[in-house]
Length: 410
Image 1: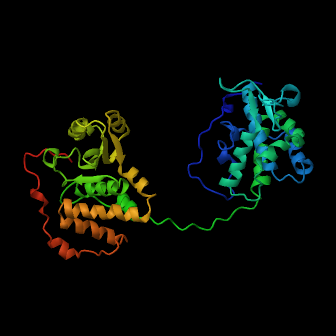
Image 2: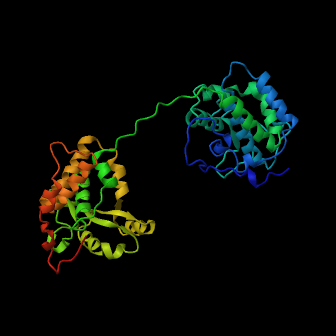
Image 3: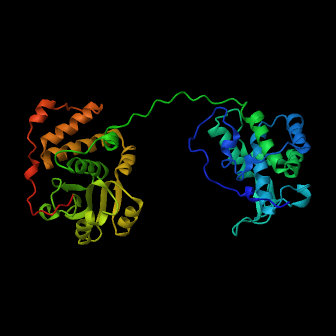
């Protein structure tokens, strides 16, 4: 009988929750086992062939081979793949009807079980192989199900197939619902009863200082863009310590700052990096926001030009990249900072404070930023909070920084 569409093999991850261990049903792991679409929807009463297979596994299998659960699951997945390529639902005498690979192209003996079947793709060599299917089942049992009672011996297990010839013949002879029932039986009787590794509840990884700033700190202030530009300055200072960074106050146009972007990085007297800091989501507006920056960096070919933004749509990211700029979003910055060591984290944070005091020259915004850090448990070594009353009394002198005719570049 010809195989239906339910036999289409899919490799899509089916369980986005990624639960581990416990008594999860095998139906959650169809794709992980290399089984076809619709495998667990097959409905029918088990036949006598299924009963024979269960009897063989219960009473006749090799006693000292504890790898039988993963091996049986791998043998079923191998049969499903082979039957799909043959266009059949079952094969009565598989060892008579299909050849097996005995030597590899170099003439070396092949000890695992590989059945010759029609190629499934132009690059296929015409075999369905047991080892890969076994590895899928073994990984699922050991990793996702955390069953430490199952041996990890793929080489030995797949070479032992000759002792399982009666079972292999039954698997290929079974109906499609029988093979589903066999997988469920092996899972219930061979996998779930195994000892499970008990993982001590992991202590949640403490989020580190600059990572937390990038994850949670608000950027609104009396001088829009200043906190974000300071965060970008701090990030670049920590991530590119060999560059000499220069920056100007937020919303200072390039004609006034003499820089290509909001933050420029120099090697000697040469501009090696230019970063434009946009505290916004870039979408269809990206051309309006970045036209001046593009014109500036195009004057200095070879400059690494980066757009550091809150986020960007996929379309905008593609177009900006095509224009020759690198897009670095806040989440990407956070992911990078997450792997920095503690000194690098503090270096970035201290550079943020430096920017706000020495470049932005806003004690009020510095106080706002530092106190947010302290309120969230980010205690800078050797520093304390600026009292709120004192911070409120600090004049924010940024409002007159840029003249009316300045080209706004932030």
